[in-house]
Amino acid sequence: MKTKIAFTGLLFLISILSWSQTQQGTFYMSGATSMTFNRSVGNTTTNETPQFVSSVDVNSFKLQTELGFFIVKDLSLGLVIDYTFAKDFKIVTPQKSSQTLFMPSLSYVIPLKSSLRPFVQIGGGLASVKLGEGLDEESYVGFALAGVAGVKYFINESIALDIGVQLSSALVTSEADDLTIDSQNLTAGFGISLYL
Image 1 (cartoon, rainbow, N blue to C red):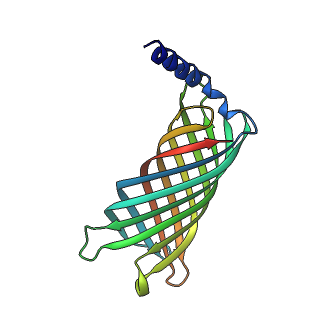
Image 2 (cartoon, helix red, strand yellow):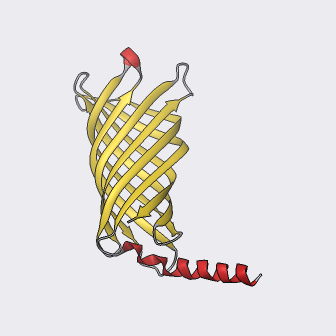
Image 3 (cartoon, helix red, strand yellow):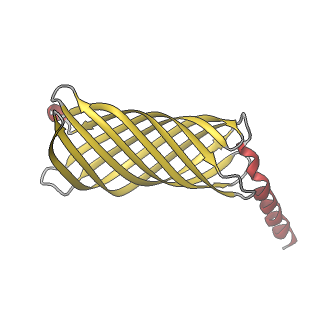
């Protein structure tokens, strides 16, 4: 019994002291994944003339990886690669789509002396969207912005669990068809960060 109490006390002490991972010069790797049911709203235009507004409910799988370092205490600069695959089962022939975001980002972890710490993140960069498959596949390229709000639970000096909600906006164009897609997505995810 005394061993369990001592072990629990040691874990509690480690969790209180674990806020030091975000010191200047610390490198980190982060990965997040989510399986979501989300609502996506998009506007399609041809030569800047609105054609239609689409609103669909889709099942999606998201995988995100990030590498970065803390440029000052609690503020980090990272490079995010975010891939989302979605399938809309609401229509007669299921529509597949994928979106890849490649962007630098800034992240700020709120300086609390606790193992549970809120964070915010913003980023902007390149976006690639593919709609359909096979001969019917259409490709779009453009720019995207994304913001994340969430919390990190620091298990120890090297590992944190991340839970967050991301809002992203992409404006992509197809040169072949002269079509532009403006889309916004709201997703939630769970991830793990490693601090080196």
